[in-house]
Length: 364
Image 1 (cartoon, rainbow, N blue to C red):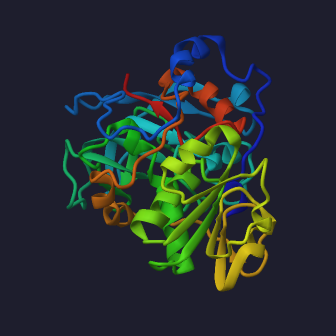
Image 2 (cartoon, rainbow, N blue to C red):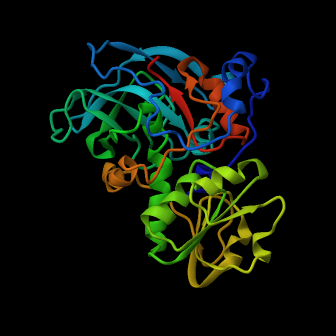
């Protein structure tokens, strides 16, 4: 994965860390202990009936690169046209990833799609219309996915933080029946990043894994996949003091408070180190013959970096684990942010305070 796909950053906005109105709305959530997003939760769930498709829709858009508060605007735009292999999704929920704000800051100009840009990779919603070559999806299907197959190579110009988005059929999967749209939107890019990382590392049942950054959007899912999908016999993870219980509840056998302990000084060595935070010393605790998956920062042997390739078939592989509740979405308790608070959501994510995923409820 490219360094900037997972890199944490300080919010470039000069507005307060969290706006007063949003703080008031979320005070009760913020006091609660962060846990899994409940599989029975119906946060933001709306009826799936597909109404007539308008010619215009509301979308967050930027026409130049820069800080969210300076360039992001909510505007009316034409509903995206459909290619033959695409479906039009009425968006119920979308989620933010670090790649969204790095892209908005202009870090990928050389390979980015043209401006203006509607941001957003993760989507969950209802199929409103299908292209002429679409065969596996139909109007009314509840779907989710990462709408850009390649995160950094000409990603979608018209993203998911909008009322409608056009997506290739192959990038979507049917939403797990037990998940709300909010929960489903939190998963696609992050869970496929963890999945592809472990596939490339050739993680096998009975091996040991260290996840660096266990409470983040990717790390929280990497712990669960390593333990419950790939069958790791030992999963350790680093996190900060307030998030120790969260990381333990995700399935980590060893939880390391990085402010109190140095993982290098501990006796354990690992078959796979999954580095979601850019810790160059992670490769120092890899067993002989093992490897390190590095999402950001320098790569030292025997580590490697990759850029995730999204496909709906990846999500289908995980369907049973998600529908059984074996693997659970983790959503930051400040959310979901409403559709009018996307600038605030970006500022919060860029501040590096999020646990799990930052999600936008688009359909109010």
